[in-house]
Amino acid sequence: MLVGDEALDLRLTLIDSAQCFRWVEKDGRFGCVLDGRAVWLHRDDDGIHAEGGADREALRHYLDLDRDYGALAAEYGHIPAARRAIGLYPGLRVLNQPAWEALICFILSANNNVPRIRGLVAALSARYGEDCGGLHGFPTPEALANADEAALRALKVGYRARYLIDTARRVCDGFPLDDLRRMPCDEARARLVSLPGVGEKVADCVLLFGCEQTSAFPVDVWVARLLTDWFGLECRSRSALGRQARALLGEHAGLMQQFLFHAARTGGVELGG
DNA sequence: GCCCAGGAGATGT
DNA sequence: ACATCTCATGGG
Image (tube, rainbow, N blue to C red):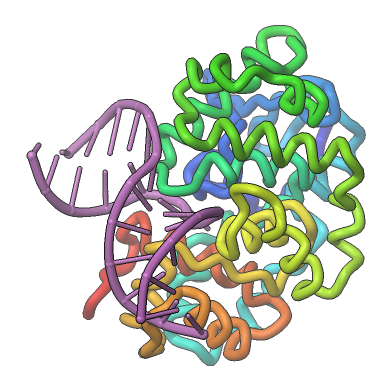
């Protein structure tokens, strides 16, 4: 099935950009379980193709293919660092992931590095997710709510085991994950940070990658550096940096953040100059 | 051994 | 409201 012929860079968006930790690459194809079904994506001369998985519209939405990224470049074209970052990665898109998956993956991301997060997510899915022909689906809230803490720690999630179980129980107990996309961003963030293991940074990642809240602006170590070095912001706390960045960049601040983050983290642009 | 990684929570001021 | 410490784990 032809998904589209957009500029989408599969490896950059699904693996290297560290907004999702679930996709695997095998023989030039990219695989994951979405909505309980395995899907494999690849590009040929015609564009992006999908084998298996959900319907075309759901995939296009997941991959954010219906957004005009040319308009994003125009919106921030007057900011030199933003223009550079967008120009460097014309194939980067900000995914629309299920909120539950983003929530658990970014709880695991706290004080952790990308390869290890990916390994933990794979181990979690292999142990608690449904087998879908070689690939494993993401664990359900019920599966993690009923997980044994020692068994989770055996997967090397460390002190985050307690966060996973307790947050999963909150979700099973009626936490309104699916309503977050319809709330004002600040209200949705306030609700998320009430979950164990979720601070402001993780909340912003869940909002941006899992709730279509494009103004949510996660500030990790790299974004904190680039905000001081490229934008000249002078704040001590990440919280204050995030507030200023959102005020500066507006309703699509989070989309822009993803380009800036990748430019800073991968060294595509030098920091400190 | 140290420092770092898409930080959060508890405690003290 | 802000600063400091601790929390597992693995790689450089």
